[in-house]
Each structure stands twice: as structure tokens, then as C-alpha cells.
Length: 174
Image 1 (cartoon, one colour):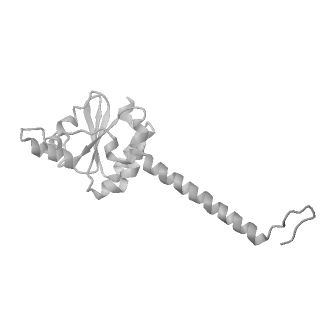
Image 2 (image 1 turned 90 degrees about the vertical axis):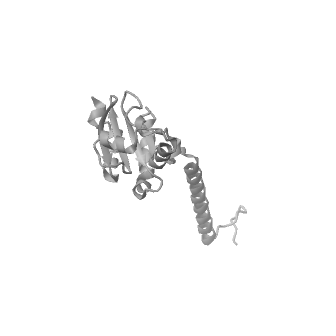
């Protein structure tokens, strides 16, 4: 390798390119590590991070204000498809207020069956909100303590969440 008059070694062009490539790979590796750590440290991506309603009678009597109950099931493929999007939106919305509650249909059913006492069942709730059956994913909207509407299906839920995030959902703005 040649040297300059003052004793510095001349860089070989291939060596300079190799050093640049190694530096880029190290930077990408560090970025991926940070992204992985961030992903693992965010608890909003799990249903258990949110407040749950444990019985069907609480769906319409949780409080006197505005709130939404999101019905989901861990075995529901449609719920799984929109899980990250729904939880991300709800996490952003719930930073200002506890507007959303969750209802795992499997755990509510287990509580209903296991108690033995006559309870307000999923069929009772379906009759009150005027639907044939409780499906997932589904949202029940309550405005000023009164039932407002049911939102079913992935696309409708996405549209509803967009409206709530953008403060364009009319019943919450009255």
C-alpha cells in the first residue's frame, strides 16, 4: 500500500467500499434491534392491557357516559386480522379518556355458564340491542348511558375507529 509524503497510508477504494458496507449493515442491525425491543415493550398490542367487561349486563350499564364495548374472540380470524390496527387506534383514543372497554366472548360465556344463577345472558343482550346474535368482531356504542348502535364487521369497525379518532363521530360530539 502506498503512502503520502507525511506518512499517511493511501486507502484502497475496495477497502473504503467494504468499510462503508459494514457500517451500513451495523446501522441496520442496530435499527432492527431497537425496533424489536420497542415492539416487545409495548403492552398496547395485547387485549389484556385494557379494561374488560366480565358479564353481559355490564355492556349497557357500565357507566352513564359515552363508551364503546369491543367484542372479540381469540379464535376469531377476522378479529386477528384487525387486532393490531384496532388496538393501536384504541390505544391512541384511550390516552385521553377510557372510552373503550373489551369483552372476550369466551370468558363472558364461561362466567355466564359457570355461575348457575339466572343472569342477563348474551341472548338477552342481543334482544335488547336488536340483533340476532353476538358476533365478533363487534362494537356496541353507548352514548350518555343509552344504547346507540351496533357496529359489526372489519370494515365497519375500521370506519368507526377512524371517525372517533378524527372526532367526526356525530353521537360523541353532541
